[in-house]
Length: 568
Image 1 (cartoon, rainbow, N blue to C red):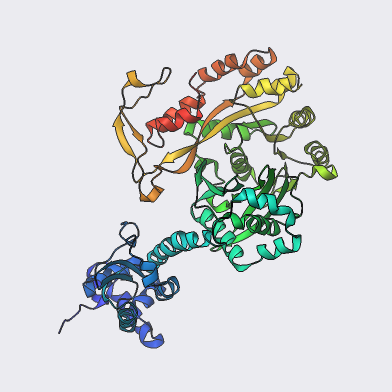
Image 2: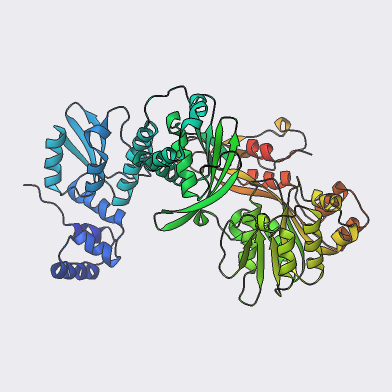
């Protein structure tokens, strides 16, 4: 008869717990019942992984983790049909592989003999057991059944394609509004829309694009700034999907000729996520884009966004001023709003009155008065700013300087004792000065009000699990680039990054802190290139130089930097 070493003895011999902690757990177990491992977990003396590893040693059963890459069912063995999702999820098991009449199953509780016996009868197989933690099994189960099988099954709802979007578009006028609403409320459509959103959130997407094409319906996710094609829903579900999203977003489903905006919230785990929705009429029907605003994924902390130490020092010096104009520049999707929110979070204090006017308000910040622009009722940036000046503000944030009127009010506010933060669309930091002058603001007002200009771009970070190092020769680098490191990294691709080679984003920046010399250059009307030369002499980096630093640190690749920063 096999004699197993007791679980408590294994944990003591491994140095995980003390004899005193074991005695306390056994006493509690005798009073309340339950398994010893569960009691130790409840007391906080051990982790889930430590218990499972100890069980593995006690029972001589292999232990595998999600991180090892082995907790993944073999493809093309119809394992999801052999053990259905509901049964696997309820019993914390997952089929891994099948060979003839032998089935390997990962379990959380290998001592559940009734479950093992049921599995034998259920599958007509001999059961080989491996063990893992509850958390890893649940994630692996979701990956196998939820993201792959269930998602693809849902995509097939609606039957065979019947001519694609082109026929649906031609027949659209024949569908009554009541019928469209009824289709949008059907369980399969509700489930499919929920799955599309859940998949996007789980994959870390920032946007969902649902687009009608001539011969199909396209679904794409933007992940780390790049759009990726996803399995396409049936074209017959185009109208119900669009209508379902519009109903959730409180948009007018009868209006298909004009663009609309809306939004709703979803719960993912223990957090609420905002979804901002925009519709656009195209020649084949309405295109819908859902922007996913997950505050937990956005670090509203200047130190964690990705600025280099010297850039962070200049930014903090600029925003510490009691008055003046701070401008963030860059194209749409370059992270300007995140940087502004991070700056406000750092400045936020009960002693300050902070007002913002935005379009739209992306994140709600505690202790800050935020105003949503509503042009249809006359609440424009300019009108809101005029009202702000009667609200005794200390700091004002303006979502964007779009015209001369808004620009003038921002600058006059900055000159009258207020710290004003805003954004502008320019290609680099010095061009911001030219842009302000071009829209009609005099040189002397620009020179007197500006305190800080930050131009930035988002870059993808190399996957830390698979990035590959290689030696770089200076002669092979593009003209104008010097890398002070013999070894740099490139993307490869692995399971952790979905074989993309990149995971997560950072940024590169061009930070100009306005001092007397630069202020004098603005007043004299010097060209942007001359102003940048002055800033560089004072230690400022161009976007390309900032990117090269990220290459040298192994954060990103040369190819990624060259795709977002110009060589000049």
